[in-house]
Image (cartoon, rainbow, N blue to C red; front, side, top):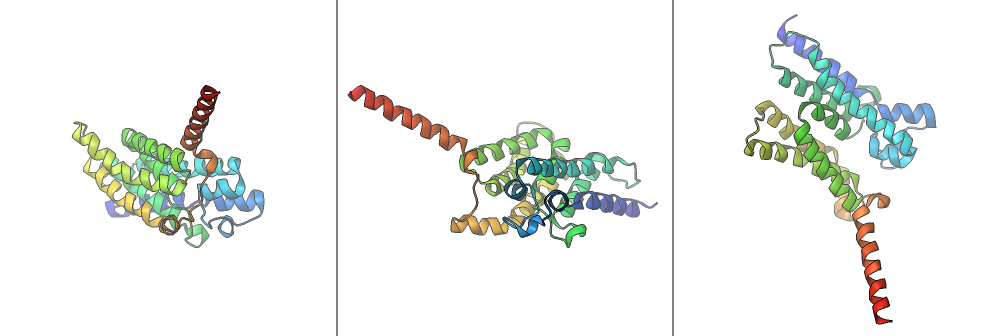
Length: 232
């Protein structure tokens, strides 16, 4: 098989792996509904948590992360003679999986937003930068309770984390920087409806996840109580 055909086969296999419509399958099998007709209409993890509950939502996220990891770490290492280095193959396979998740061939090219699948691909390839992006995600989520804003913040922080690591003396592949520069704007693009709702102040929040707000509110309440006791 020629290098071009080998690369095409790798991209196709990764795309098909990423195309598995996890939330749609779980919604139809266990709940008898098309998740795209409920909540935000998105076939991803966040809407699954909102519509199907936390158990089904967690299952969706785990499988979607696994699709990215499978493509980047296994399909890319099938030994197809492409002539490209392993890192490049892993990134190409990961990108194809993300594209499959966003534009799934099994559900009319209406899939999720690619965050979990991209995370699965990147954690295996660049754990340090992925860990920093995950930290950004957690901080924004705990502050705002808005998953879309957290996802976009994490996606945009990933290439910045790579640049910071390179500035600190760590070797960062140009392939990885190129991949990050493509995936970050793709994630933002898939959240364009969320951006409109954020601007209009209509974006959904998970209020119970706003731990910072609850923590500071609790401390402020304790301070007022202590102040009242002092006046007594």
